[in-house]
Length: 519
Image (cartoon, rainbow, N blue to C red; front, top):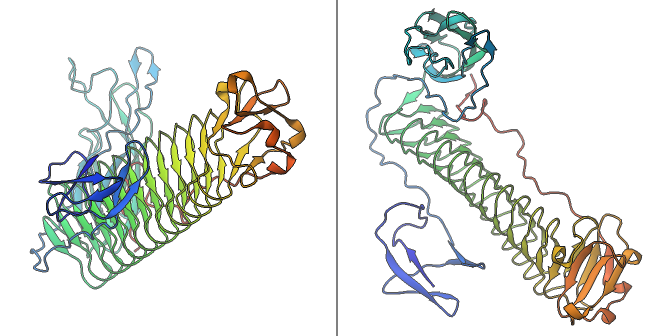
């Protein structure tokens, strides 16, 4: 098996072009080929997964700042993935559909935007079809924290927030096609403080608490420096570094790189494939959309993959990892970690410490690593391996394959997790009489079981409910006569490890987070 490594880069993004040198493995160990050496973890599997020992911090911008341009905030584009409501027919005419808008503004400055640009006329008579009829504003609410002027015919809003206000301004409105009125929609205007720093290209914060707004079109490189900063990348493939303090970073559009650095930071990738590094402190990281890479590093971190096939690595200390949608790779690393695969066919590796690992939906592959781990397969056909330590292994629904590894392991069965044929039973690969035990969950007792062997499974022990009930497990290579009641124990299945952060991550509304700084 061969792998690739960059001589100066420790994390390689998928589907990018890099100049590489080749190295190879020999007898299961990573070896150099030429002058290249890679040190890290070789995660078991087919094929194995190689994870470097460290991910280097994101380089910060040069300390020679670029002059800050005059603030020219622009509207945040509407998320194209916002679900479209079903139009309601009224007579021969379908009512228009108004869609929420997201806008970023600066206190004391004017921002101009058109709320009708993303609204829909199902009859195709909004100027895009064969007729000339256009949508217009039917009704709108007033601005509470600023001045608002509205051109009903064009849909243009002119908004200026009060100089002393920062936060979220919400303005409702409805649209009309001349015959019928739309649903109620909202304009969410995130107002940044009047002292916001705007950046186009490269820029810096100060030693205090800053609000920094990147460009809508360029790839920005922003370093918050000291203080607890709020940095909003907007458009372009941005590099955002919080540096000191408890920072709040938003990548938003494109493939962004976010680094919290010191402090307890909160990092949102937004759309596309982002690289998010918590680094020091107890951080919260959210990939949101796209195939993201999240690395907590030091501290007790909480990592959420969101949509897309993500890679999450906890790092040092006890972390909480949540893959969420799609097929993810989740690595607990050091510490007693809680890892939750969510939907999709996930690969989960607890590594060091006594970890709590749950595959949930999808055909998952779970390795405990060292320590006394709890492995829960969840739904579908899962592969569970405790490896080193005294592990608790429960396949859940589906015909799962359970391997204990070294240590005194407990293989759990429960009524309702098997099926009417032996193909529905879990396969226990390496049960050891006298060392391992069969755990009976959900009130199942030894007297409820039927333990037997058959000519079709000579040499293996079959465990089912009664003599003709559902098949629960097959113990490979075990003589049924060697089992007694002492090899079974009643157990409680541990609670599902769902790493829900406290407090609930902000800002709202979903799906595109926008910063809401304190006044």
